[in-house]
Every structure is written in C-alpha cells, then in structure tokens.
Amino acid sequence: MAKVILYFYDYPLALAVPEQELFRYSDCNMELDEAQLILKALADGIYPTTGEVLPKESPYNDPSVIRALFTVLGSIRTVKKSKQTDEQKQQGNIDDGKPKNAGLPWTKELKAELASKYHDGSSYSELAIYFERTRGAIISELTKQGLIVSSDV
Image (cartoon, rainbow, N blue to C red; front, side):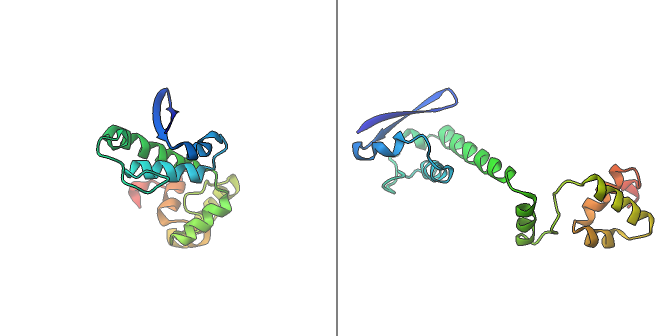
C-alpha cells in the first residue's frame, strides 16, 4: 500500500492506495464525474475501486467526514447546474413538467412586453401561458414593476 495525501481545503486526508492503483491518483486531470463517483462511494462507506464496505474504524465512517463529503458533492452539483445554457435550462424545465421559461431571468424586452400585455387586459393565467412561466412568476414580476400589489391578488 502507498500513502496518498489529498487536501480538502487545508485539511489533509490520508488514503492507503494499493501500489497497482497508484497511477489512478497521479493524474491531476481527473474528470469531475469520476471524482464525484469516488467521493460518493467514500461517503457511502464503500472502497471506490473494489466496492468493498469500509471497516467501521475507517475515518470515512466518521459522521463529520461523511457530512464533509456530501457537502462537497452538493457544491459540485450546484456548480455544474450553473453552467447550463438557457436552452438546457428550458429543456430541463420541460423534462421536469415545469413551464419552459421557469426560473429564467426576465430581459428588458420581456418586462416591457409583460407590462404592455397586462395593461391591455390579459389575465395572469393568459400571461403565464404566453410567457411560458408560472402564474406566480407573472405576479412577482408585475409586483416588481410596481404594476400590482401582490396582496391584492
């Protein structure tokens, strides 16, 4: 076994790695997906390369280490989501059964068009369908523009 030290912020994490697998950890260009799988296995108490359950006394079975691993995994997922294009977000919304533009920012042009259609008498539901957003998003944007008071809705 070889000793490999990884640093999580300023905290060293020592790993015992079989000599024949040491090359896997020497490549600094590991794909994020592969790193996630390894961290997930460790957080689940599994030795990533063999699939064996880690011994009870393993430091990876310490609750604070498990929480730290899941925290890192959660931040990785957050970073990946923030890199999606608007088109990817729209497709994700459709796949999730949400309106196409749910959660996307309002452009100046869309804000002006919303105000115009509201002044022309369109209902909240009609606006939600037209702009492919939730009724709540329509009410929220009209409130931000000062066109309605949300307590009156």
